[in-house]
Image (cartoon, rainbow, N blue to C red; front, side, top):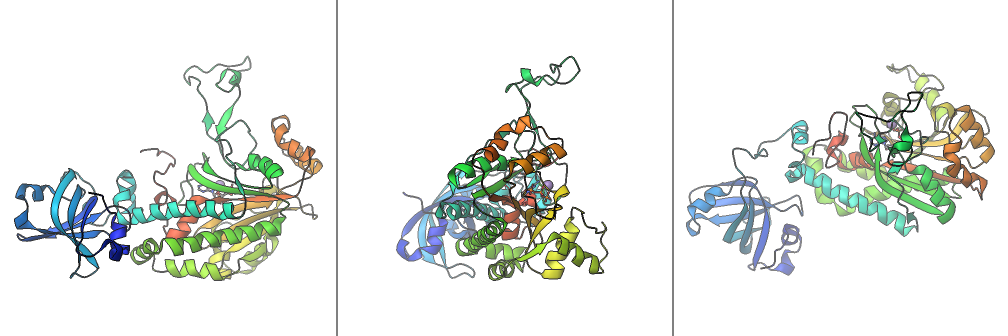
Length: 465
Ligand code: ATP
Ligand code: MN
């Protein structure tokens, strides 16, 4: 008999037909009842709600029923009927039950009681079976899909940039080395330095911290591209907003100036949030009721507001005149900390802020220099509860200006030859940004720790599962 998914039973009840016989397969969430009747809540992951299976004890082998415990996997054949009980519209009257997989009640860690997020992280292989995490994973899927839709509809080309990179100059964060050398016996040069010419690639290589430099090459040929892939940063920062392995979306657009870049980024975030509200409302509702009573309001409110455009210098003035006592004192040139960003977004403006025109010293070498000689055309989008969700800029298209910065910063011009070629041959104004996928998910799900929006988080001292 063909298996029906629970989402269909609940959402397409009419077309399946009350009183028809159906087969469902799923995992037991709860089992309760008495000597005559049992109620089993079965969940198959298709929707946050499970379906209630009603078991007339007299019709089944006692031994079989005993073996049905929380976490066990069942195949149930039964009649779809309207439910008398509260909280569900339909239920299944069981006719046949087969146990596909037992779950030892002594050892299965997800018994009914509520669990802390910390505990659930320690059983990341099983936490998708909790309601909260299955909601997060369905939303994560939908957001990935929305992102591809958004750019595909606009004619952007999805460009796969390399995960292993030989360029040392991305400068976005600390990098992980990639090597096949025997670390106990590393070949050395006469001066004691490591001889990377004997390594797999014949040079030193890393896991990418950003696909941007390669993305720019794509934009200088295809016009508009985006990347969407894993990104790695060996930053030893144990915060609720940093992972060592995260996913990033990086669009790069030829002929876009900073203003066009901001318009696109704002439209993009709003599209994703609207997509989640339209396609994952059950999941969002569940998370709203369980964890974060303001989640739905917060998501809806984002759709209606215009993000504030705020030059860095103005932000410094606001912070200095706020009278607020910050742990890190504010001065022009400071790389703003989370406390400053949160003050601006959550207390001062109470809206997302796009901060622009940062001091050049605190931003990457490739950003377009402003006329003032002090600032660059950077834009960071700051969100309530999250802080920075997007980092981007207009890129410096002048070879001469770019070379000046490369020299000022003692960067290796030779290593960047291929990147600099884009400015040598047919350079053009262009812009782009990077959105941290998990930061977006923090916003959309209302979760407070980034470890809880990725299936298997990688953080310092943790690569289990
Ligand atoms: P932050 O100041 O928060 O560390 P960043 O300035 O290092 O961010 P960028 O290099 O501009 O960030 O990266 C682009 C985007 O990638 C950020 O806006 C953020 O959404 C995301 N991001 C950066 N680092 C991480 C990380 N370690 N874990 C998850 N997301 C990240
Ligand atoms: Mn960082």
